[in-house]
Length: 201
Image (tube, rainbow, N blue to C red):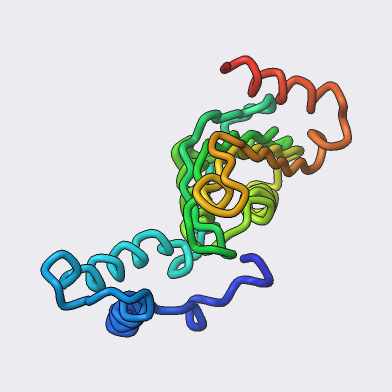
């Protein structure tokens, strides 16, 4: 477990009633009437939506990697274009895009199910986030759980806080990467992974 992550006993629990009241207060603060027909059920809907969007706060993401297999596979494993949706912690508006996750198994050939890589991204994304931290968290979880020889995580995303407010530049994409082990120290291994990521275009 990430030393900065809470234990299961300390993990937060979503307070639906409190969230619903907060959304109602926000509507009032914005000058709206939460009792009108179109908004009457909105606080409850938004509370349920936030429970889903922040689901990664209420579970241990690394646990999806608990099940592994010894397949004697020692070459790069790479899953590209994993759809990713998260919430910018600065403005609580979405950022979304794709994640590319790869690793070189250790000498024992320890691998995990391909769907687990997508699930790992999903759970770290479902919390208030910044893209840089999300990228590193996914990479570090793979290092902790699989003990691979190398890891690479690349995330490309559009931030709606840049598209719909402030600078207002829709379509601008941010790319972040986290590289560990052999994929960081070996230029040829890193180049192979990046070429495979680029080849999907």
